[in-house]
Length: 50
Figure 1 (cartoon, helix red, strand yellow):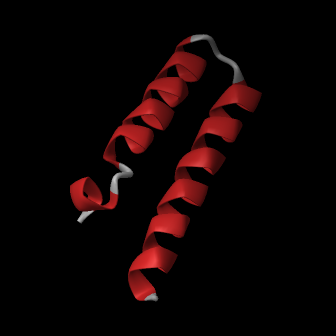
Figure 2: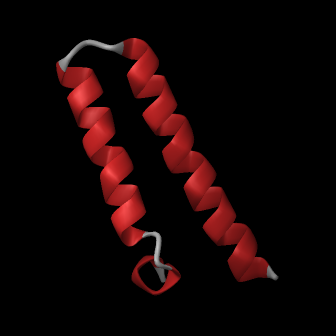
């Protein structure tokens, strides 16, 4: 479903941002990337429920 939703590459981008922020010990950037990832997944799920 993730591939079909078009969100697969977006999720990968957020995961790469998370890893980079963790590597850099940038807590605020980690928080922002996690938030963006969850928001994007939420939007996909809502779309599937409609």
